[in-house]
View 1 (cartoon, helix red, strand yellow):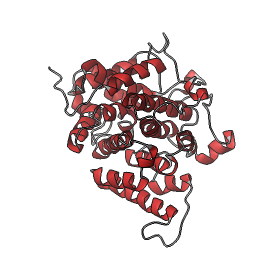
View 2 (view 1 turned 90 degrees about the horizontal axis):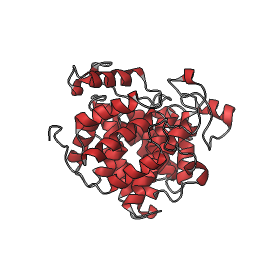
View 3 (view 1 turned 180 degrees about the vertical axis):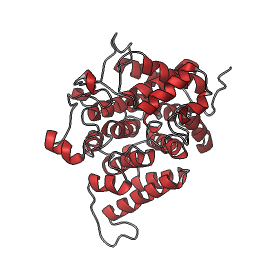
View 4 (view 1 turned 120 degrees about the horizontal axis):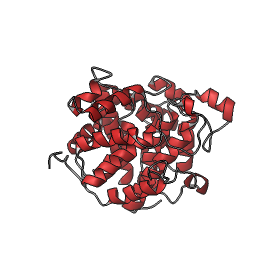
Length: 353
C-alpha cells in the first residue's frame, strides 16, 4: 500500500469508478440471481443500466454515482474550496450534459429545480420528498469532500458534508450516511499501513461519529457481528454470517437507504480490508444496489491502499476520457484527485465571495 496522500486520493476516485462500473451491470439483482446468471462477478458485465434500459447494453461505463462524484470534485477544485450553490449547479450540469447515466426521478427533479433557479437551492431536496431523501445518493458522491477535508474536525466535516449535498439531501439520515462514509474514508486515509487498520476501532469510531439513532444502531449491529465472527467481547463462540445474512440483517436488500447502504460497505471493509480486489468483488456479489455499495467500498479501500494494487484488467477498462463524455473519464478523475490532494480545507466558502 502507498503512504502518499496523492496516490491514495487517486486510488480512492479510481476505485470508486471501478466499483461503480463493476456493479452497474447487475444493479437491482439479488445475490442469488447474480450467482445464477454470472457465477461470481469479477469483471464488468455487459447489460442495460438501471434507469435507462432503452439505451441498451453497456459495458465499461460508469453511472450517476460517479457522474455526481466527479461533479462535486470538479466544483471543489474549480473554487479551491466548497461553494454549495456552485456544487449544486455542478451536479445539474454534469447530469444535463454528456452521456445519460440513469439518474432516479427524484434526483432529476432536484437538479431541474436548481437549474431553474426559482426555488432556493437548499429547498430543492424537498421537491420529491417533503422531509427530504433518506437515500444513499448523498453518500455515493461524498468522497471528494472527505479527501479535501481530511484534517477537519467532526463538526467542520459534518457541515461540509451537509452543504455539499443539501440541494438533494436534507433528511438527517441521508446526511448522516454521507457523513459517516466521509469519516470512514478519512480513517482509512490516516492509516500509515494496512496493519494500522483495526476493524473494531474503525466501527467504534464511526458509531460515536454517527449523529442519527438509525445509523448508530446499524453500526452497533456490525460491531456485534464482527465480535461474534471473531469470538470477541461477549461472544461465547464464533458465529459466521454470510454477506447476504448481513445485508438482510441491516434492512432492505436493495440498500436504498443511506443507513443500509453505508453499513453494507463498512462490513465488507472490515472483513476483507487486506484484500482490496476481494472487497470490491464481495460488494458487488452481495446484490442489491451493487454499483453504489461497490463505489463506496472503493472510496475507502482506495484511501487505504492507494492505486498500485489495481489489476490491469480493471484499470484499463475504467471509462476513458472521450468527446462523448466531455472528457470526464479516467484521466480527468486522476487530475481531480491530484488537485484534491493539495487541498486541506476546514470550512465552507461563501458562494458570493
